[in-house]
Length: 247
Image 1 (cartoon, rainbow, N blue to C red):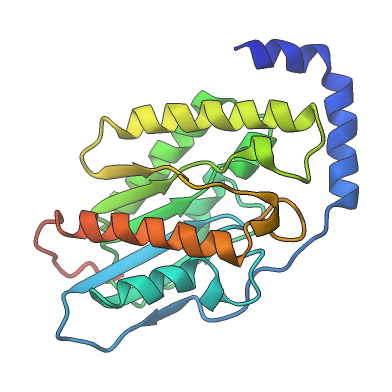
Image 2 (tube, helix red, strand yellow):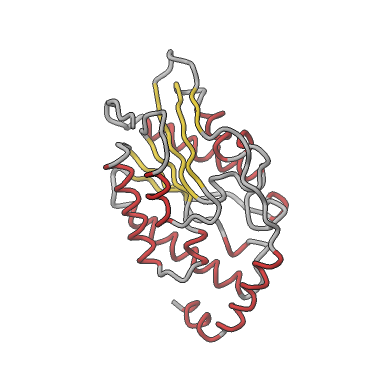
């Protein structure tokens, strides 16, 4: 791709900008609040969800999980389901880290649908897109085979070419890498009946982002949670009869 050639030609500039970004970046904490729970409405069909990912899944940019992605999903989905949920996420996590994180996690609920929010840290690393896609596939298989999940919903890559924190030309390069990763992911998932790709189909404008210029703010979490909730409701209708996959 053309951006790769440009990146090689201006590599010293990109490395310098990367160091500057790390120095001046405003480090925000992960959202506080419980990461596991359930509703108490047995009149509705049961559904267990697992959210896994990096800092955005962990709620960086929101003060509490109630206003982060997890809280938005719970608030929307409890209208439809007797819901149980678990969040496994960590700032800085790459795709290859998640299997170990899941191995050491304790689950108190069944896992019917897994929602993943991963990729930004993979994009900013030096790994190639095909290697990342292989790690994604291994993670999905872990969710199916070890956790007993019936469906994986992959949340698409954010528009890194619009991240205010990143200066040009670093922003342009990272944005193009994110688009490449996202495109490969969408094509790959399109071949799988038990996976769904959900693009971030909304405008991530500067005023709606967190003060660090890199993470979502509450308004973005609200829209993101709404879009994903609608997808989860649709997917849940297609699930086979659930058996006990408590782990």
